[in-house]
Image (cartoon, rainbow, N blue to C red; front, side):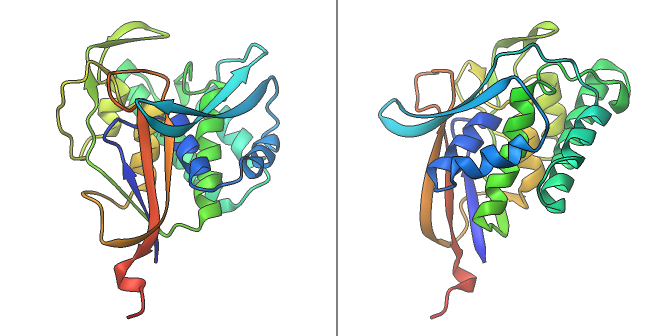
Length: 243
């Protein structure tokens, strides 16, 4: 069985996840071509190599050059359904956005269909989520395990102003997930990162027994005094290796 372990010791965000998958060997053009079928305009995907506290990692940015509308869940689902990629990717993308909408609705006292996706519905987040799912499918991974999560502390700014960390939506999404505290003041896990981890991972635990085939590092945009990287470890479950 081909397996993946998400080492989230420095957190997880959509751009970090996608960058790590590119670093692990996924061709960025495969993702570019898939995203092109979404009928979204006014952006470009930039993939660059950088370092974070001595660790080389891929950085992914979606530079938006045209103003984008606020979107509702039904608008995003319609975009995804029109995309030229597998039903599995479409279903998973719908699951991720539905999870985000449910969390935002709970936090703001409304319903998922009425949620305005400010940050989450922005073009970069749509591309982060769909791009990550396309990359995971390309790798042929059958099972994903994620490390327990440390969410960070302090405050962060969003469309609604200054809010506490973990962001309320993030905290809704990670209900039932093992968490631990560290000394980092800042946002380590974004709502998008949390939704991807929860939607794709079969379990949250330590690294499973495996034969490692490839490792990828995806770099975040913030510096908290430690390597700001998500590490993906891809290999074969020991149970599937012939003796």
